[in-house]
Amino acid sequence: MTATTANCSTRSATKKVTVNTLAALKARDEKAVFVTAYDYPTATFADRAGVDLLLVGDSAAMTVLGHANTLSITMTEMLVFARAVARGAQRAFVVGDLPFLSYQVNNDDAVRNAGAFIAAGCDAVKLEGGVRVADRVRAITDAGIAVMGHLGLTPQSIGQQGGYRVQGKTLAATQRVLDDALALQDAGAFAILFEALPPESAAYIRERLDIICYGIGAGPHLDGQLVISHDILGNFVGDIAPKFVSRYANLDQVVEDAFRRYATDVRAQRFPAPNHWYSIDASEAAALTQLSREPFARKTA
Ligand code: KIV
Image 1 (tube, protein in one colour):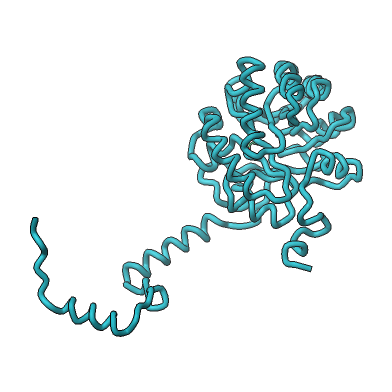
Image 2 (cartoon, protein in one colour):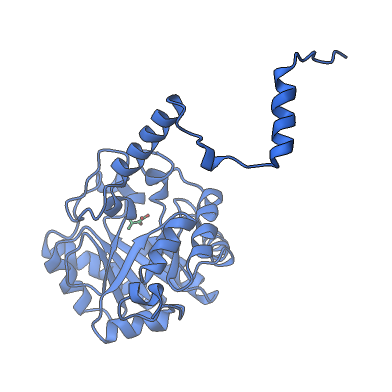
C-alpha cells in the first residue's frame, strides 16, 4: 500500500469522483467530504487526503483576496483559481462557484460563464438561489453541465438577508427553503448545498428531496459536509469565526512563526549557510577570490 492509498482511508485513491460516485455515496448513506480550495497546493493536499469534493468558492474574495464580502470577485479572478484547483484534483470532484452577476442577468450569461468553469477543468458549477434562478439552472443543465444549487444563507444576497444570518428558523421559513429546493430539483440540479440552517429544518428538507443534499453549518443530517478550508486550517485573516467549524490546524501561527525565524536568520547572517550555496571548482573559486582582493576600476562608457 502506498502512502497515498493509506491516506485515502476506504475511498479509492485514483478513480475520479463523478456525479455517479456522489449519488452512490448518498445511496449507501456515506458522508461526502467537501472543502473549499482556491490554489494548486491546497487542492493537491486535500485530494491526497481523500477529500471527495472541492469547491472553488467565491469565498476566495474574502479568504484569499482580502475583500469584506464575496460580491466583488470577478469571473476572470475565479477562473484563475478554478484552473489551479482543477490541476491539483486528481480524484476529487471540482465545483466552480458562479460569482455575483455572472448568472443573475440572463440565461446566455449563465450558460457561457458556467461553460467557462467547465473549460477551466471543473466538473460542475454552483449558484445561489431557488425559484428565481430555476430558469438559469434549466438552461445550464440543458447545456450538459452539472449544477449544484445553494440555499439557506446565500452570501450573494446579504443585502436582502440582512447579513450572515441563520435561515429556516420557523416551519414557514423552512417550507420556503423547501419550495426553492424543489424548484432546483425540477430544473435538473444534481445536488443542493444548504448553508446555516437548524438541523431540524435541514432534515425536514432532505427527507423531501431525491437529489444529494450537502450542508455547511446545517447540522449532521445531510449527505456531506462542506467547510471553508481556511476555517479548519486556521489561516483566515479576519474576525469571522463560524461556530459550526472545528480548527484542525493553526496555520496562521505556523506561517507567521516561519517568517519570523527566517527574518531572524537573515538579519543574523545565519542564512544563507554553506549548505545553501552553489559550489564551483576550487581553482575557479581561488581565482575569483584572488581577483576580488585586487583593486577594481569600473569601466566608464
Ligand atoms: O464560496 C463559498 O465558499 C461558498 C460557501 C460559503 C458555501 O459558497
